[in-house]
Length: 76
Image (cartoon, rainbow, N blue to C red; front, side, top):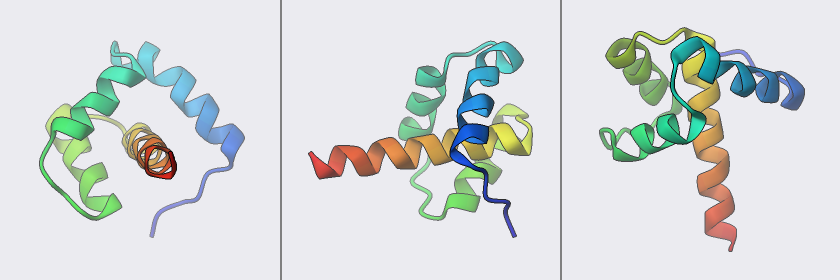
């Protein structure tokens, strides 16, 4: 079962990802967009972790941000 992070924790995690991974959030979001057509949240997290050797928290934050932005686009 996955942990639920607060909005503040999520923002802090996103802010650290470029330093820890050497890639900007926009690059990671594009990677998820262009990656395999996985449906479930945990499948996307698992793919990022194994394909790019990311920490669980980083992969989860990236997928969560991707889902938030995708949902926001649908509302427009």
